[in-house]
Image (cartoon, rainbow, N blue to C red):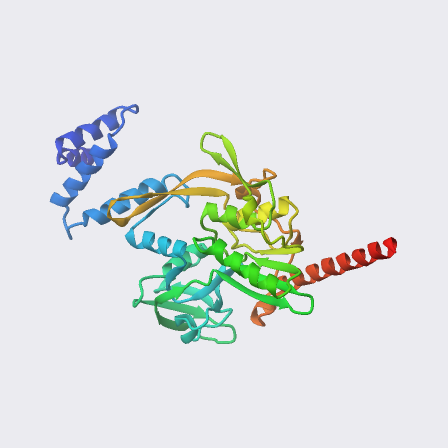
Length: 398
């Protein structure tokens, strides 16, 4: 205690008085702004060692303040991090171009994207990531691992990889580049039965428009059923989730938003978006389908507009609001939570598929997409049943 009192004597007068008051009375409160500036000024003038960078000290103070909330989604974004978020919302990013996935707590390469630094470095599907730039990633969320791998174009990142069948660990040093984000990928998955496939990778400013175009192209090819793939989709913009959900739901709530005061309001389907009338529909989800993906999947399930196939979703039923700060930084603050139209709390219950299909390690190794196969099978059965019913009605009329 004596050492503590000696240290107080060296503080600026106003701060020393405030701290003494805090020690002497449980009811006393340190004035936040004045206390911060006093400590920052004192550090700048008296710290023994390398002079601290006031900007980095400020960033650390903000992160510490937000960290005390215990909400991993309320976070400070320095200018670099905020720029990356803006790039994602636009539809591109700077990184190595590898799709990540997670299983049993391990983050691995699901596949390198075409003509990307990851592909040129010969990363392979199934490669397990152990370290990023020499730091272990064990225990980190997949989104945090992704953020560590991404970075400014022209810079390099080192990955430590465990590859099945190779006894030693592998090291890859890969130069980052601008990666055009393929938000929507589409194809006619089953030509004979005209089952289309659309993968939606993120909910950003381009998502709904590109989805609309893909649906139109598949319809011109005679599509009769659709698989919508929301796997590995971490979410994105709330308004875009409502737009995408409106493509498959004619009327009614897409999502219910609850503000901090407990007041609930609904975001309803936009009728003008319902211009394709896709049926039957199967939706693929996995443990990385989060946020906006869960809004769309939950709405489709609650409205019985399609069948969900895969495994339980991530469980992020919260809404963040971005506040721009001076100097190019920002803060992302949780301002609301959301529920599915039936009132399901996504943060507690996640989105559970109608048909559970979990790939095995062997499926992943052999690139066998058992979830997609099951979804196509379901649609073929529905199409077959519809045809049988149509023939039956025709015979009854004759």
